[in-house]
Length: 169
Image 1 (cartoon, one colour):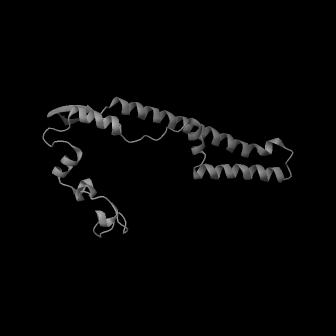
Image 2 (tube, one colour; image 1 turned 120 degrees about the vertical axis):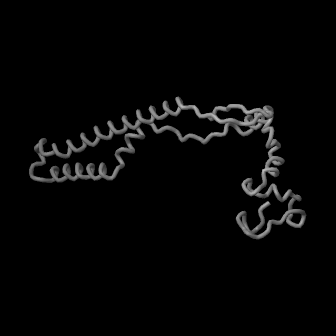
Image 3 (cartoon, rainbow, N blue to C red; image 1 turned 90 degrees about the vertical axis):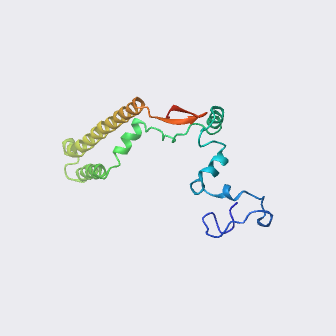
């Protein structure tokens, strides 16, 4: 139960009928790192010397799922390309290309197609550069994923009183 002072208050927490709740075990309100190993052993239904039973471990796995961090979705090649175009230097180059085309379009040589060459060249070079950088980053992500799959970590846990090797997801 959390009293009106908030969850991080230094004031003592109220439990029981006077607090408007059900009588709770005071140790169940504490964070796990504040409890003794014996309290954690009782709270999680395990044994420090024997570990979890195989059936209890299976039950927890079914209930809570694997103990792994959620992986963010992998960016698409198009998203990587767009992200390449948002860099400060790239934005400056794009502004320079637009400025070059605008200046040439409003100047005395606006009918001459060759006067737009600088702006067009900057655009083409920036797009080619962004494409190559996006492709390289995409391939690097694939290589990193392949490396992480090749190196499968494992740990040793106590199951039914025996040390068992478990692969880490």
